[in-house]
Image (cartoon, rainbow, N blue to C red; front, side):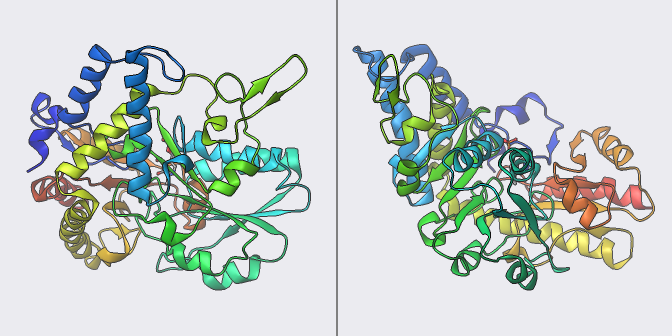
Length: 400
Ligand SMILES: Cc1ncc(COP(=O)(O)O)c(C=O)c1O
């Protein structure tokens, strides 16, 4: 029972928290670790000639090293920004600024992607004159390969998609997608819902860039992670420049130092980075990502059985696959006889059950599915079967 490790549950004894796909709760280990750091070793990093600064820098670097281990890449290929939205913007803008992407080119993205992977490209397309095409999803929630093959022509310079949908919970086989790409296609994977839920081996996937957002993985808000393959780190011009991101500056010009630091102008979120370190240490302490995935699969299977019973009785539609191996514990659904999703959410809230209702920053997907919105409940390592039972007790009352 990991709930005891999370103070939020002690402070809110009736809480049934089923909204971790939006943001996870934080364990005491992380809260104490960050407090201890701020109280005893905090200072700005980079070139501080005193031990507090050195200690802070050590922890900042240790945080990146842990993330690199998690993803099976080098820590020199890890860039910290503020969240996944920011990380995707950073890379998307850098590709344009570096003239890799421009007039007449095409970016292929997933129809089921989060707005974080859609809106920045739409915003840039009018400025840099490239176009965007969406890869469709099949009715079994897998990628539509035929549609992909049709759209992946010579003009496509960038393919970017989510690893796991924040609506369907379905996993895309990104390793297979990579096998179909030309070597000169830039491939970005949004790991915001995969990296927190199962072991992700970036080296095996072979993508050029993988982003995720640390607040969904037990760390504090304010740290977005971008893995960027080392050749791209050298090649790309950063979106933002300034202090800390340079090798030399004179009155006419500046040169960057060619490392990941060039994408991190200004003082980074040092405290947030330490929270990432502590979060990953905590995950290691409880058995690592494999153990976490085992738990995810156990409670996902349990929830799916209950969803299936309701769906068989035509009382609910689950938007996502039924095979636990092909998904994570993120469940979106609609009720044929109750279309008011806000009301459904409020009914759960009245019983201290936190779920989320709406478009989940995935409006193109909802339009593709012809849904005005969905209700979403999502599980994480602190959830147990009792939480799922509490959820279905209320849901069964609503559908009656
Ligand atoms: C798949 C996916 N990508 C990106 C994001 C954006 O994360 P953030 O709001 O931390 O930038 C989310 C958040 O819900 C997500 O689920």
